Image (cartoon, rainbow, N blue to C red; front, side):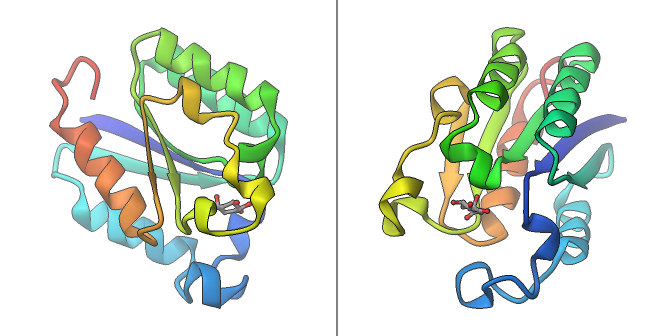
Length: 149
Ligand code: DQA
């Protein structure tokens, strides 16, 4: 069995009621169901959310220590957390894929959202497709050879 970590940053626990015009009306539980159904039988999808920067960083250490690929929605940390960026770099420098995802398209929103301090160390970035951003990221990861995916 392979595992993919799907890590979500601050305020994403409020999906469903948070700005539904931007993020839709589905919640994290719906995302978990969607990704579990989308994953091949031999892949476990571990969907987590935290508002705590340190916890998110520690989950990235866990990814390094267990060689587990990551789908990461850093939420607002995307735009300013060099600490999270450095932890994400630990993952990709170890040869483990980390796909940055966003539900919305940050480039079509406020100027402060146009910068991601994480993207440069991510394997790739998918944004603007709603929950499909996660599904596309998962799809990429599960196609990789088992050693890295
Ligand atoms: C987000 C975009 C970020 O700018 C924002 O702070 C979020 C969610 C997205 O998924 O579209 O919390 O990462």
